[in-house]
Image (cartoon, rainbow, N blue to C red; front, top):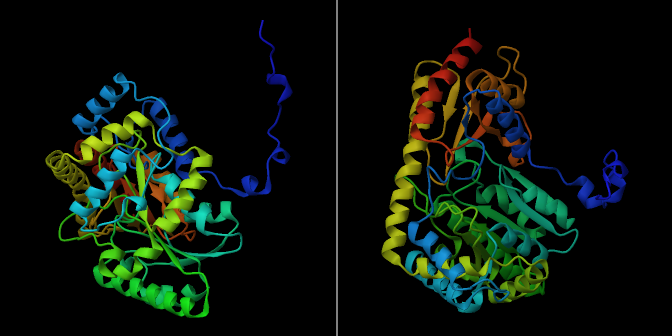
Length: 429
């Protein structure tokens, strides 16, 4: 008989963990997911637009990539990979950036990780000391949590819908002299919007100017973390640009966050890469090596082969963009029609990523006082699940929400929109 230890644990004790962990907030999205599971268990229909993930049924990974992983496992590629990644994959990423982005980096600039999240953690851990200042716009994804884990000083720059929730150089400039790290993301999670080439260039030039001044006085440089994990998913006339292509002098100060998770619907395959200044990348390698954040070897072998198959990559991305755009467009057109009919809803035209920003102008109506009130109304009355911008650091109740389309079909969306319209009409009676 096994020794039953369950009676020894009792209520959860917070004094068994450190101050940092006690102060770290859990995921709002996971809490919402629990509510959704409960409704689904009750047999209710829910259009789930919460999770930044893909349903394999709607968005399968590239067939050749899946076969490549199976073949690599069959071939015995199951031991530890090098801590900075398989050389073949690092070379494939190097060629991919030169081919697709027009950026030629040395091989020492490429670091392979288990998805993109370790890159963000690795940058924070490698370049920051406790008390250093990190500047980032809100809404944005998880910067507040990484700042907390590092004991850094956050400077949150609140953005607005007029600028697509993207920061301007005028907003950022006053904070840069004190900053050690500037975090940017485009296309942006949670908004699905993109920074314009003009704004990107202006910000890049300001960073270079700041670093020239610091170099003259022997101060540490200002570094840029540029998360463009969604860069292959852009729509319409929107064009993805990188700070380095617009301001090449930024290259020694910039680290890219990238990987296969979003471009190739491979969130569970866990292969990401950092591309940046070798001096930073080498230290990230040391940090993440101790964490054990390398990607599985078989997946690395398969991704290396897949990335070098340019026709297969292009064909998959073309299909991926079209299918994501169909879903975002269906939502945007549906909400635009509701607004034209006088209902209190506004959506920003989709530009990139898998997200749509929607504002439900219901605060103060039908007893609704907070974003949580609006979210619960739509979930319970319309089976329409979404995430408020509070989950991304914009803590005010603004009526803005993120809608993610990776786990739903066009038919799911079309079935849900009339239910949402009925709720809005009832709310404004």
